Amino acid sequence: MTGTLRQLFDEKAIRDAVKRLAGAISRDFGGQEVIFVSVLKGAFMFTSDLLREMKGPVKVDFIRVASYGSNTTTSGQVTLTKDLETDIKGRHVVIVEDIIDSGLTLRALRDMLLARQPRTLKICALLDKRARREVEIEGDYVGFTIEDGFVVGYGIDYAEQYRNLPGIYVVEEE
Ligand code: PRP
Image 1 (cartoon, protein in one colour):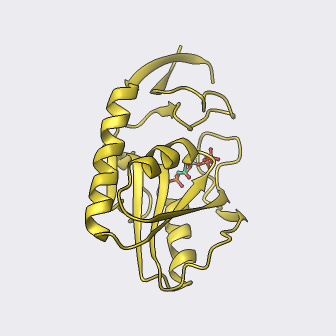
Image 2: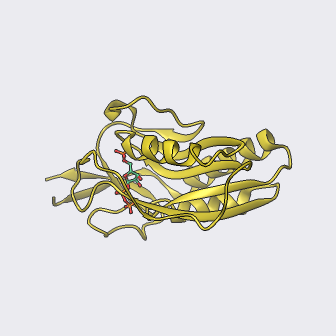
């Protein structure tokens, strides 16, 4: 896919959304410790900014699931390629995702993590592409709801490119 990048959200808009989400999570957990489960790779930048805005005690761990390969459409196959190092049993857990698209990744992840019996399990996603949902799953904390389209930047890639962009862009085909 070749195309031009059209900006959807600049750094300021993202920063404001991150502050709002961290504020809501901090309030909801009222000073209790929260474990953020960051879903690699796309969520790494969002996770680090979110952590810096959190008020209460926070731990972070990383998990990696393979769902797309290098294609731009979902395969429906979700496999765990890197597990957590933290025991989440009895803990307050928030899954941190860059984007919910078909919802297949999060549904599989949620079911895997629920089996480990956390005290609570919430979902925080920066972007929610609702129109593409194939399974019923909702984010508890959502930054922006967006239209269909291929987005990149702020951790999100196209074939491993563009993760470094500080803003979020949609790739428009030429
Ligand atoms: C993206 C994104 C989500 C998932 C969302 O990850 O980070 O994890 O796809 O899609 P879904 O709702 O249709 O399952 P990707 O597999 O591209 O890996 P990456 O984060 O390493 O880029």
